[in-house]
Image (cartoon, rainbow over all chains, first blue to last red; front, side, top):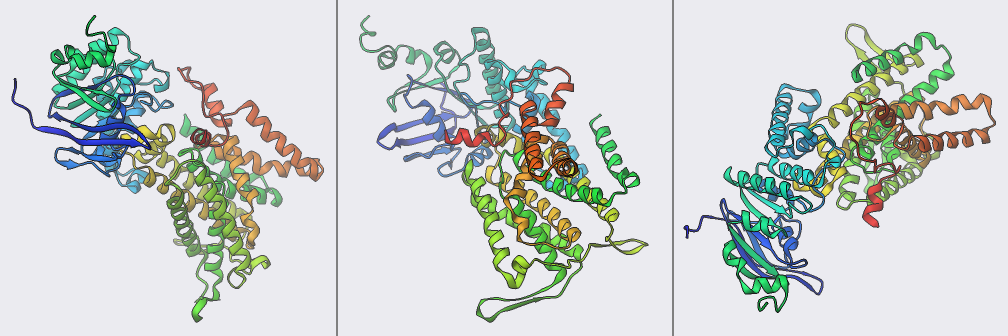
Length: 261
Length: 348
């Protein structure tokens, strides 16, 4: 086995309760720099809850999340984005009434902060910043392979294409870690295949990736490591080959008896 | 093409006094112009952030009172034996103070209400307008209450080489209002096309996603409210120095409704929308007056409003733009509902 890489994300003893409902209990896992880690589990296992805790959309009842040594507890989502963590969403992945290109200009918000007065007066600094943003937006559109759709309204794209816009939006923040929430649901086999290539490509450019996904073949082919959740607890963790044969995982997905069959 | 239309429109408006001599119509155009500036400021909030301010006239009225009191001077007693005595300053200073004070009020209202979404902002703005109206009505020592502030001086502007010019005539005031309206239009246009404008659009379309790409919601919305309130204050100041008398009735709810109608019919979220809607509903009463009984006028007014929204639910400008635009894939409008559909979603 390779030596463990430096830790990027560390989730320690995290629990989330919604009233009496325990969505997550005592979750521990880490993601190393440059790794692709997947979080899997049956519906209702707590995957999305875990995701929301990491990205600051939900405060954990107990426990701590840290990224590159900085505690994320209590930070607002945009502050977490500033630390280099970016995410995509399951459903709401685009600004539907804007073109794909304009979506990315919105996504480049953190890079384009110029003095408002300069922007109103159209001063050179604001203009050159605007030019840079437009170049960057074009690059991002190209990166995810949506050049032909750049001028179409994002809401008119297919689900698969909207997911790609979502990824491009997350990449616009120039993250060091990308969190993908069920990115290939609704994609057909060839779209999924292209997407796996994209994920690898993003990792090769030095971005750590945490993935929540249902599509098992996709998860098995792309992940370095897999964390399996069930009923809010981690039941297994390890590389794809180990997870594939883990009895606890097979039972969680297929029910008791499947192991005997 | 778009800028050509804009330039032609400004030239057309500028030429009006050359062929229109009727003082009654000139007066209607000036007050309509002032209300259009108010409607443009409302559109910045309603059309570009999706937040409905149903007390927008408060900022307009505050601008009017601040500007009038600055140029008239006042002498009021405060609790604990304090007194404030203010000597009259030039109206142009009042104009600037009107923008500043109205903007500050926008900041306070935004700070109070943008921590939560949806109907809260609407309710806070309505309450704010009502409170301000009651203050204007009852603080007689400062505002003269229902007796109104009278003899408000006209605006004097210093022109290089020409000395001071006091804008007394309708012609002068017409060009003043036109100039402020053009500046306002350009300001809002630059704003909505800047990174700040994109942040506002992002928030309106998909707030969760906007937050995750790093847009600070409260800051963006509050800044939009400040700018919007400041512009409304400027319009109020123009109103005070043109009409030269203001009473607490300026805060009446119907005045906010008029602005909302101008924005909705013209097309919220379109720059030219409030101008088109404003011209129609600002001048409609003028044209109805000679041909109808007063009761019938309001029925006709309502009929035109309903007719426009029935035929062009997105507003005149966006609907026409869509018709003449190059055919392009477009998803079905979900924003056809006149008022903030976000409210409905949030509370469903």
